[in-house]
Length: 229
Image (tube, rainbow, N blue to C red; front, side, top):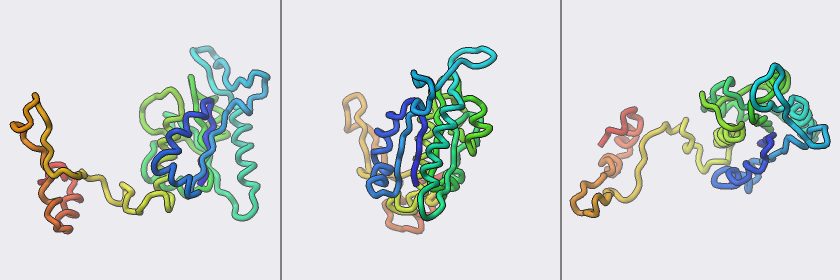
């Protein structure tokens, strides 16, 4: 899997993607990450990738031309490789897109290349959504400064479904289910008003200390597991 990010700020991706799970996956060559500066496909001498919106209004809009050229350039390079045909998907991050879910992330994990178009300012020329992107994805009903963070969220969610990225398949939330977890100490005494001895301890549910895996599994499957003891 190769993640391609087209952005006005390509340097923001490396710090996060080089760490933890995705960072290890890159070292194992399971995942490749490529951040592309949108300005490289701008045609004017100032490498301008945005312009004023038609019809008036505040802010600037990312132009369709450099985005189209960028996507076309990336696709031509990856699809011209010899051997197996490369499956490519172009994604525009948008508040009007399909809401990101585990099912969406799992579907996207079957592609060889994901190309993320990250908007900025007042958005992206609508012709990108109509003619360039294969789909639009939203991470929620919220507006951010740009598409970079949503793209990272989608990439992280997708990466977890790629074989070899996680230590075990059971680490997927979709497989194990989401339940409360605890670790040492068994009893934690928070310090309140400087008097530790008079503070009631916060205890780990006794079922998790029982050694009875059937009871533990049942407790974890309980949707009200937060109240279990």
